[in-house]
Length: 342
Image (cartoon, rainbow, N blue to C red; front, side, top):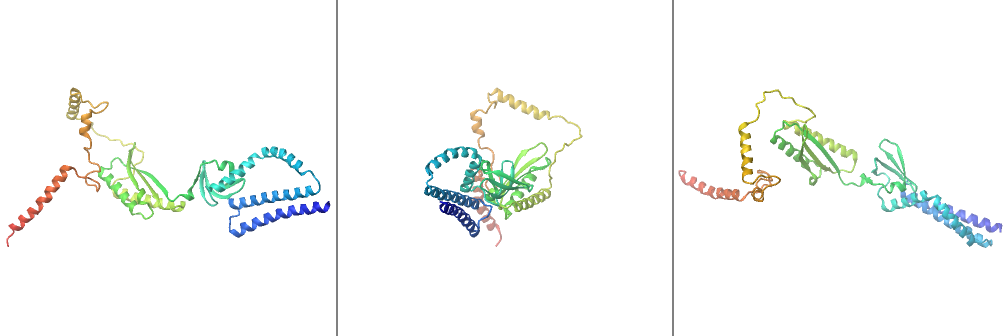
């Protein structure tokens, strides 16, 4: 009897040690991170196999000794239910660890944002995930909570957005503003670290004390230090463009103009009142909306894109005028050649 007990206990213990040693050799030989979730799950599986194998070996020994193994197993099943309820949080973390392993939203070394926190993942365990925050503190988050969070993994982004709003002074003339917009776009198209397809530079707002220009582009980088270097270079170049244009950056201010108030233009005011009275008399007052015939007449009367731009399309009248000019030019040249003395 003693020989059977010693043999089966020693066999169970040896099987457990064999599983542990085998998994540590696998982790060390395959180059896996000792703190990564792959290594943790291998260790977990090895321990589960070791425990189950040890129980089977001990149960076999108990059966050889004549113990009622099936009755003991039934009793353990009832007690196991109570134990499972007691260790429910641990089981949730364990299952969430498997979910993180299968879904792989993060890896060790990834910089991520979760909730209102950001940091670098240092280790992913079976129970919790360890993250090094920006202030160098270490955050330990149970896997059950971490798996339910919205995780932003910055290591997986292919490009990083640069977005900035600059404000120019209200004294800036329209052509000065066009110059600034064109030069900023030209600079961004020429920058080797900016994606040409994502460039957007637009006048977006008449603010309280500035003409606001929004700049939004994507930098070809995935690393934060490089991103801030590119952003700094863009801001310095934009500053040079604004300075060379003759305008300047606006700042919250109030300007007091001292001068004699000449009042409103009485002639233009009377002209406006007569126009509105005429609209009212003809039943064409455009409130709350234009008359359908008037709206049809106004449709597509403005030039957009504006005249002079590469995308500007000539109207029918302008095309006719240009065609007449091209036809008349050769005749005028021939006439000029004939008039020249030989």
